[in-house]
Every structure is written in C-alpha cells, then in structure tokens.
Length: 149
Image 1 (cartoon, helix red, strand yellow):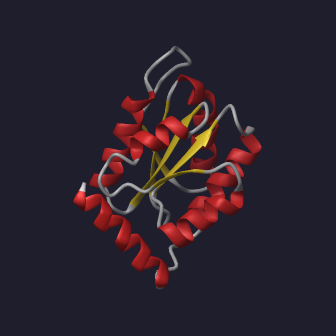
Image 2 (cartoon, rainbow, N blue to C red):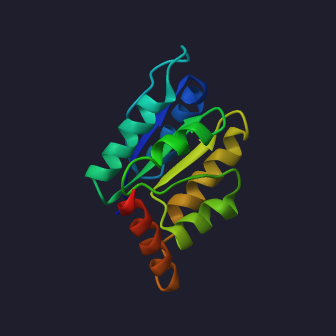
Image 3 (cartoon, rainbow, N blue to C red):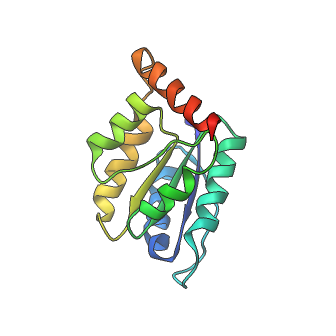
C-alpha cells in the first residue's frame, strides 16, 4: 500500500504541484493538496507549515513542497519538530536522503528543474526506503540536536 502524500506550493510552484499530484494519483498515491490554489502571489511559509504539520500528525506519510527554488520551503519545514526536509534537484540525492537521512519531506524548485526531472525526483524519493543501521544512529543524533533547541 502506498503512503499518503501531503503536497503544498507557493505561487511559483503551483503549476508543477498540479503535475506532481496528477502523476502521483496515476501511480496509486493518495494526495492531499494543502494549497496554494493559484499563481497569485502568496507566502511559502504558510504552505510549508501546513504540509509539515500534516506530516507531523500523520507519521506514516510524506510531504512534498514546491516553490521557486525549494530552499525557502525547506528552511521553513525544518523548523518543525520531526520534519527532515531536503531540497533535491537530482534523483540520486532524492533517493539518498530517504535511504540515509530518513527524510520525510521533499522540496523541489520549479524554477530550477523541469517537470520531467521533477517527476523522476519524486519517484526516486518515494520509491526509496530508509536503510536504518548506522544511518539510524545519525538520524537519532539529529533528533537529539532538535530536542535541545
């Protein structure tokens, strides 16, 4: 069974978000669109927070955030406890952030990559599994740092 994916974007990522949702739904994922709803200017922290809070609440899910670069979304998402968000612009990084960092939120930049590559990155991220082992120790160390803040 495929996990639920919460997805959000700002105005720069709106059109790519629609493509990603269609792609995921065609591949059996349940997508929850948390906005935005147009290309009209808006504030990315609102949508990064909505997706991050949904992933926090539903621990067996993933988030995808799309803005112009993916950077602002990632910075905001990583302020939320238990969120491990990564900006990825290639499939290898997307796979490795799941395998080694147990990332639960993927951030992509609509002005950095095209839609075909974006869909490949999404597939690489969602298709990978956390390897555990020595990587679990490192994820636990990140959690310890987060808990001290």
